[in-house]
Image 1 (cartoon, rainbow, N blue to C red):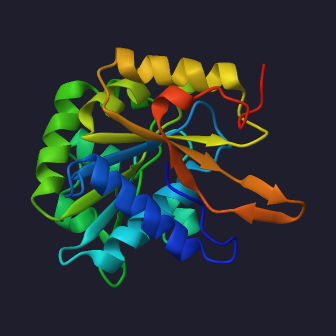
Image 2: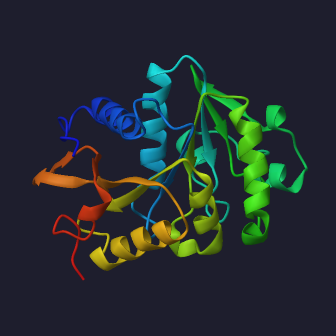
Length: 228
């Protein structure tokens, strides 16, 4: 288990998370990493952004953040970028990758969710996702995806199975243990490679938050998560 860093040093904490993900993949980072959660509100977008920046600091090739939560996109807001053309437009064939990618920081690119999609489940089928991810792999070194929460249903399961590595974000004292166990079981049933569980907002003392770190999947539901 990765030890938490100082609460005042989130960059170091996400660097440790990056190293843990790479270590569990055999030393080299997986090219496509999905970040999901049992339900909304666990901090998926924060983890996606922090992890992406950590990979960008250590990478030679660009790192691409991809917002695939088509129902409630948030990455573009966190980065103060326009929604613009993005994933939904690419899946429909209404845009090309080069025209949709936004360069936001040194070594860090963004592919937003794109035009709002009421038909997200129909767009995010396995063949469509496989084709899109194949195209994106040719443009960047590492892809970190802000995936829909598992409560979203079919699209969350399909996307998780298409990633090389999946992190499940749970929030201390907020995520129910039964939800964390259920999400983990659903990921494994979908054929996802669950690298670990990211415990977010673990309080060491009143008023101080430890940074994010990783738990092995088998520890999901222990007393660091709200019991129910």
